[in-house]
Length: 116
Length: 107
Image (cartoon, rainbow over all chains, first blue to last red; front, side):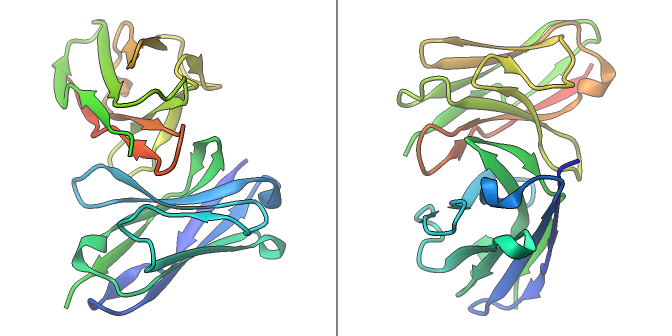
């Protein structure tokens, strides 16, 4: 069974940093692209980042480019999202997802609140 | 960026009725379109992939179709468990973009 479990969320002040983690199990992690998607309270979904199988290629929307960094450790079957210079508009539930072309499996999500 | 215009934003439907949601793509996305169902406080669940293919375990009353740049999700004979928010995702090119979501309630 595919499982994705996010951690690392919480309350952080504007301008500070936070690192999210996602522990994967139930599939060969190193064979799949992985992604982060967020959902602001009562809002729609926004794709945040994607990383290739080896980690050599990463992709971001303009809204987070230069502030967020996606990475992975295939030996640990883990995905990460380093978020710097956080803004109030980054407040959201962050999901990690397996990317097989589309996003086929999602974690349960972790809440990040950016507020002073 | 590819814009995905989803309609309606919300709807109340009677049990047993047929219901259709549509996403219109601002550019050609081939059939790189998937549909998801999200229940409150839960993560999204894949329902339809590549526009017309039913994900394993999804009831056959769900179906997907395409007409030009319009992609549709249809639920035949609505059941109470079908309530939730439905949204589409285009994964033709980065940035991936989602439809704004359709909230489905039972009348």
